Length: 108
Image (cartoon, rainbow, N blue to C red; front, side, top):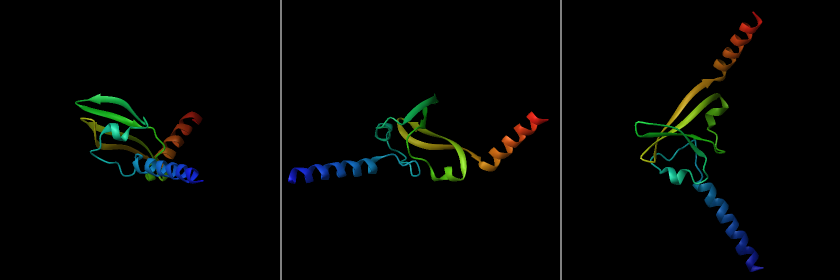
């Protein structure tokens, strides 16, 4: 019976530590090394320029701003340390306007 409780405790401990160490896209740990942030392999490099490496995050975390806008988010690393989060924001109003204009062009 004791062995069962030890197994349950170990499982819970692993789950809690996984959550604690997971990447938080709402509060990035600026200055953290890429190796620490990318343990799950969710950062995908898409460009390198002038000593800066740019990555997309493909993991399960979604910024809360996604509730009101569509965006393209990139992360910049210098010397393998998180330096900046780059957000290209498109509001839902802009998307609706763009779709409306495309429909008008096709109908005309």
